[in-house]
Length: 405
Image (cartoon, rainbow, N blue to C red; front, side, top):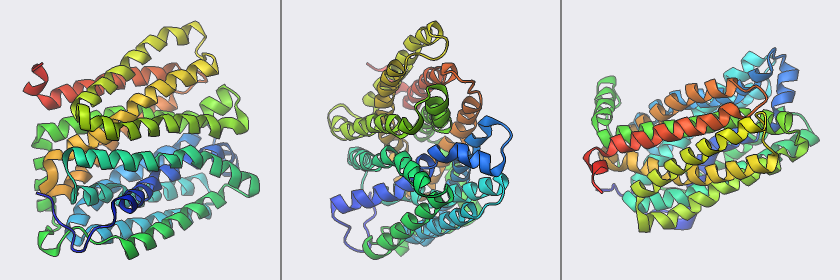
């Protein structure tokens, strides 16, 4: 049974936009930095060209650690206070990066940004789950993702524009301002969705028991593993996208355009999923998407070798568009499927689902990204391997259901 908000909920449209904005804090902090990575590396004295990837992966490292904290915290103090706390930490991390004198300080600030961004990122899932479930939840999350995917579409261009007008440190000032706007909007407009009588004690024993419960639910664990596998090659892509497009393909200032086109493909699939899921169901769509990503990547593999590791840019873009259409169908559905049986522990459930998925994807994605050698061999192989692993995890999650026609 869904918990009811203490006050009347926002109108559907405004709620979707607010959810999208809160979810987009991570996307903004990731994508807008990409054009600035070479300059950051030069200014802060990195020694290896792949070291700048840690500016991206450090954010996800903090995110993985923060999600396990903010979910249970939101079950104890409420959704809004937990999100507000995360936004404050995120803004503190932005200040560290703005004034960072060394690369190590920059990375520390990025970890703190990720830890703080976990507040809005993870608690928003519980905020939605408090009011929606099943296909309605998947539909709302798909529309929210379609809105928030516009952020990575325009964020690299925003970062590039800021670089033309000022320095990379100004990008973090923009992050800080947007987080402040989200803080105020949430405070003034969104009612609390977790009544006082439904809140749980925050103790290691209670949290541990909830974690064990989540891990024992085969459906929740299986779809969480599927999410982690699906996200790993995206981590690799995000951390090395600037190098792939600007260094390997020499796109220069046009990099934000290519990145934005691919983000639109992802967003279009998420938007379409909001309608398709009502007709075909989450499980069927997710399996078709994972299988498609895997098969297309396997088919692309010999073409990559035939072109010396760098196929023509138009062909590589065509491949990535198809892959991102498949991945876009995956995320809203996999999250909803993992959260489906966790309504009674939505906060800690969302935390475990997101943290475990992130802790799976970040090391694997970082390993792939650090293997960048000027070609796209490893990136395409990652989509093939992890797509197949995601499909296998879905089959395992469904158990006997998967054996039925």
